[in-house]
Image 1 (tube, rainbow, N blue to C red):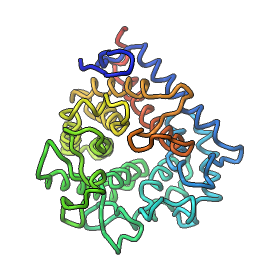
Image 2 (image 1 turned 180 degrees about the vertical axis):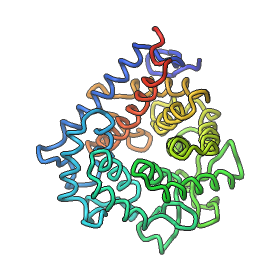
Image 3 (image 1 turned 30 degrees about the horizontal axis):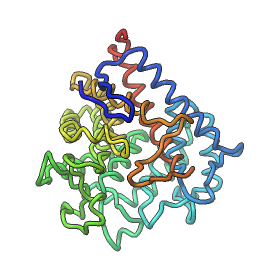
Length: 358
């Protein structure tokens, strides 16, 4: 077992699930859900919605985290106020920030809509999402105005694929699988670095220093965007289960191996939570590939989420990037971690090892 560095003590990361760990995971999830619920008005409006869209993942998180009633209230509000009839985000505070494409924000809303039986909303959102997928490569465009720059991004592409799985959109999911396979095959410096962007058939390896965090992950270095392999693996695990494509499982293992061979600072750096999606990916791969060695990593990440939760039930973004988080920062990060921790809990409870005695 490896060692967790903390401010107060050194403790080993667990590698086997125990009833105590599962209880603490369940309690952490419930505290996170309660924190989100406390900031939803009676009409479903999330706190701060008039300022910025920090709520986009909350309905999905509430669905899988055990509060579908709160998710339904928020989706009802979103349908009335935040979404167009065509399934896009309205301009202003509801839209994705900085001219980015709406894929990362809309995909979770499509998932929540489908889980809640709001199939008309999910279908409308999927119609909009289809406009932001390159029909040739399968990648998701990074910018709303992709005609200006047809940059494609791993984070948005994998997220698009996950909503395609949930809503049964095989065509979109096939394209995402194709993109993730091609992107890994084109990497020039594995296992050390993962370049995360493409333009058409070309891997983007030349970029200004100020955009490096968005374009490459160095798994030997601290404070990197370590989440990229995890979200790719989460999609690939689901794609393998939905299509019985064994090559997708192999690809998912390759993505996760980039993380497991990387620096321990991914988990131990108290200023960074960039590893969070690795927990989701490991949990998804555990359910799809139970003999693939994913259990210890899923257990480790369950403990990681419990340790990183604030006393009030929220989670905060990486302090190296957001040293003084406000409510909007806490809202989107808590929603994300509730979702990820819920999938970890689901995976651990569905395995026979989930009842290992303490």
